[in-house]
Image 1 (cartoon, helix red, strand yellow):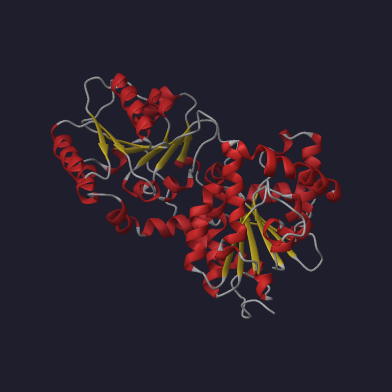
Image 2 (cartoon, rainbow, N blue to C red; image 1 turned 90 degrees about the vertical axis):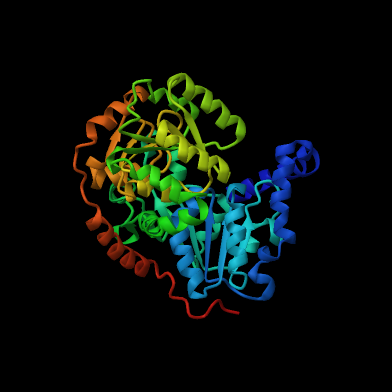
Length: 445
C-alpha cells in the first residue's frame, strides 16, 4: 500500500511543482517547503553523520503547545532534536526555537507538495535520523507511520484521543485503529481516553498512560502573568487599576471572541457593577471596526473602548472609563493566557460556531468558565468536566451567557490546588516512563 501511495504522490508532483504553481496559495506553500533546502537550521543531522536522540512532529499551534514541555525538556538536556511541522502557522515559533537551540535542533517543513523519495530535503524518511519518533494527536502521515513502525524505532503518541472515534466511517476507523496499534507508547489526553484505548481498541494497558502536559505549562506561564503583562501589555498598570475597581467575580472576559458572539449582550448589562472586556479572535482593523459597530447596536448608550499599543489612546481610555464605564476591547496579541488571571469569569469563544477555543487557560487562571456547546473536538473540556464540573458551564444559547454569569457570581468555586499537585507528581512519572530528558550522548555518530 505504501508503494501505491508513493506512486500517487509522484504522479501529482509535476502538476503542483510545474503547472499549478501559478496559483498563489500553492506557490506560497511551495516556497515554504523549499526552505528545507536552503535553511541552515533544516540541514539533516545525517549530513553531518549524526543521529538525533528524538524527533517530534506537529501540525498546528495547539499541537506544538501540547508537546512543548517534552520538547523543551529534551532541548534543555542537550539532546539532538528534530522537529517536523506541517503548517506554516507554527513556522515563526519553530524558527525561534531553532535560533535559540542552533546547536542541537533541526526543523523540517513537511513536504506535502514537494515530496520526492530519496531527496533529503523533501523526503521525511531520508531527513529523519532519530530512533525515537513522537507524534501528537491524530495527524498520521503515511511516511511517519512507516518510519515509526521500524523495529529499531520507539514510536510514541502524545495527547492521544478517541473522542468522536465512533462517528468516523468504517475505512477511517480501520486506518486509525491500525495507526494507534502502531505506537509503542501512547499518552492519552484524559483518563477517559486511556480507558477507550484499552477497551475499544484492545491496546495493552502497559502501552497506555494518561496525562495532559498543558495544564502545568499554562500554570508556569500564569505564575509570571504580571511580569509578562508588564512587558507585553501597554500601560498595564493603568488597565489593572480599572479592573481593581470591581470584585474579581464581577470581572468577565470574553476570550477568543468572534463578532457573531455579540449576540450574548443586551442593553441591560450592568456596567456599574461589572467589568466587561473582549479579546477578539481576529485583530485586523476591518474585524475590530465591524465588531465595534455590532457592539454599538447592542449598547447604544455605552462607550466602546479599545485598549491597544497607543499610549495616548490608553491614557484617554483610562480617564474616560472612570467617568463612563463601557466595553473594553483588548486589541493586543499574545496576552490572553496571562490576562485571564485578573478575571473571575470567562466566556471562551468558538463554541457556538465550529469548535471552542482553549478552555484550560481560563480554568487554570481560576476563572468560572463558560462556553458554547461545540466541544466535540476539545479534550480540554473532558479534562475539566471529569475533575471539576462546577468550574465549567456550557451555555446553549448566546443570549443566556450573561444570565448564567449573574446567577453564578455568589457560587463558591472548588480549589484546583490539589489538581496541580497531582499533575506535578504524575508528570514526573510519565516523563520517566517516556524516558525523556535523560540523554547523555547528545546523539551518536
